[in-house]
Length: 494
Image 1 (cartoon, rainbow, N blue to C red):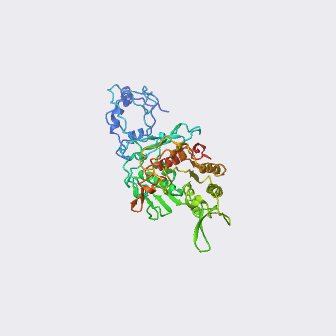
Image 2: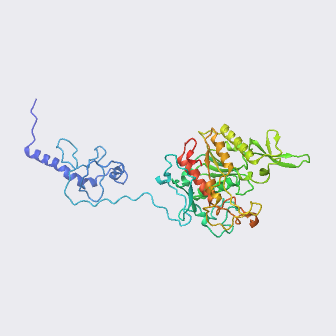
Image 3: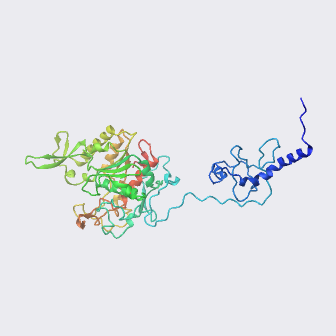
C-alpha cells in the first residue's frame, strides 16, 4: 500500500489556526444567520419562551444588542454555561466567554393582567377567581357556624348592584325607585364571628352552573331571593343581552313561573311558585260555592318541574301564619278526610314530612343539590300586616330586644324533618340573621298597582333589593364552594 502523503507543515498550521479561531468568530456571525423557512421573528426568542433556565448562573455573553437566531436545525442549540473551549476533536465547539462590556439587564415582561377600573358605586362582582375567593377561615374543620355572626357596615363592596339598575326587581321590592330616601340598608354585609365567607364570585357560580338548572320553589320570599340572584349575576355579564327570560315574561307577582337563560353558560335560573309545597285545591259546598283546601299529604302540582333541576332552593312559611291557613277551619285535608278544625302548626309538620318523602323518593344526591331556606323574620310593630302593623322609619339593624334571640317553632320542625331524611338537604338557616334587619323591609316604599302601599298596610315581611336576600345568595355560594360534595353540610346547619 502506498504511503499516505503528508500535508506541508505550513498548510497544516493554517488549517489549525482557522479551526481554533472559529469559536471567536461564530458569535459575531450568528446575527447574520437566519433560516429562510421560519417567520421573521428570531427563533431564539421562541426558544426562550419554553426553554428551561440554565442551572449555572453565568455572566452576560458578548452579544450585539439584537438577539441572535439559532444555528441551522441540524446543529443542537449551544449551551449557555461558561466553560473552557472543548478539545478540537469534539465539534461543534460551544461559544467562549469574552470580556466585552456587559449588556444591560432585560426589563421585566409586562403583566398579563391589569386591574379593572375602580367603580365607586357599586362594586361589581369579581370576574376572575383568586385564592382569597375560596378562603373561609375556620371552616376547614367543619366547626364554624356561619349563621352565628353580625351585620357589618361595608361602604366598599355593598351594594352588589346599584339601586334602580336591575330590571328584574319587582316594583314592590324596588324601594329606592318608590321614594325611599336613605340607602344605608343596602350597605350591610353578613359576617360570621369565627370564620369568614368566601367572596361571592358571580362568574364562578355561573361556571359551576354551566349546562345546569337552578330553581327556586316557594312563596314570594323565594321570589324575593330569586330576583336578588338574577341581579347579582347580571352585574357580572359583559353583554347583558345574553341573559333573558325564555318566554319573554316580565317580572310580576301575578305570574308563578319564570325561566332566565344565561346563553354564554347554557344554564338557567328559574322560579316556581308554591306557597305551601303541599297541594292546594278547592272543594264545593252544597250551594256549589268553592272554598280553598290544602291537601297536606300530597305534594304540590308543580313537582314535575322540580325533578328537572340540578340545584333546588325551597321555602314555605309565611302563608301558614294568616287567614284560613292559620284558623284551620274546614281547610286541611288528608286522604278523604277534611278536618273541620286542625292546628296549623301540626299541619305544617305533616306538609314538611310530605315534602321530605317526595325529595327522598325522587331526587338523586349524586345529581342534585337541595337547599331549604329557613323562615325569614318579619318586623311588624303594633299589629300584623293587615291590622295596622308598621316598620317605617327604621334605618339601621337592631342589636337588642326579644326578637334577636327568637326562633320560631316552625324552624325546629324543619330541622327535625331534614334530620330524618335520607337525602342530604342543606339548611340555609337565615332566621337568626334576619332577626336583626328591621331596617331592610319596604315598609311604605312598596307598591300596589300605581300607588304606594298605605301606612295602614305596610310591607314588613319582604325585603328591599338590593338588600338582605343578597346575603342569602352569598350563603348558597359559600355552601357550593366550601362543601361541593359534602353529604349533609353540617357546617351550614343552625
